[in-house]
Length: 387
Ligand SMILES: [Cu+2]
Image (spheres, rainbow, N blue to C red):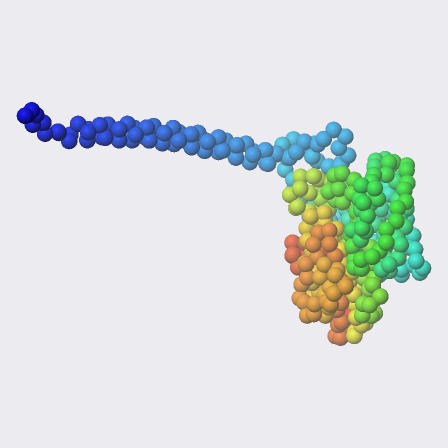
């Protein structure tokens, strides 16, 4: 018989030692990988922090003006230039100047009869008054800011003739139009003119403005107005007014020589003046009027360029409010304050039975401090009112 030696007991330890070595190797690798990952995270965070610091520094610097910039503004000034507010700046004879100022007519003009509404817009540059004794070198439709109120009836063909008597290209963009903007709203060269048409299919009150780039600058310099596209089915109003809200950003006070656009203030949306129909508080000195019991309709456009208007009439409630100028749908009733967004419109009816003086404001009250306040005198009562 062959005998076999009894095999020595096999120790388990060597196998177990091999397992531990593998485990140790694996853990070592994990530690290395995590170490590298941690280092990478730390470096990335440092880079992100550096980038954020650079971005913040860059944001604090006013942008340099592009070559050929014709804003007339202060974008060319050095970084960090202070932008003092000229809000409320007034010469000693401001009250007399306000009284002598011929308020912009706010009454809605008649719409032309017939199937075609011919609209002429003459573009020019010139000095306008934006507050008592404060002048601004503006870019205009029709020599005034805002441009002429255009009133057409829904369904009419609006035939626009644009003549550019200014030294630079301009254009017009009608929010009431459904047209290819690259064609209809294209630039018109200095001295040139053009005609285009659109069907006024959509009723309401709409902004029009120069759309030449940068439109922001062209709007801030005064190139905007309102077009009312009146539907046949609105309830009757006794008195109708058109109000265009807008901001002014001045690079100097404007009392000694006309101011121009301050791009820094415009971009930061810190206006010097906010106005109804282009001139601070003009309807405070020259109130709009109505008789008790009459329905007064306000067609409101906010031309911006940047701030909304929170339309509110002190002492009453908006009986009907067609928000966003959506006059195809039923109005809301009993509204205290209605938002009119920059670049948008709203239609509001009030019926006031008690004689008195009723301020109309943007209830974003900083705008009131800057001039966006007017009075509706109901019943030709004596006196005035501050708000
Ligand atoms: Cu323009």
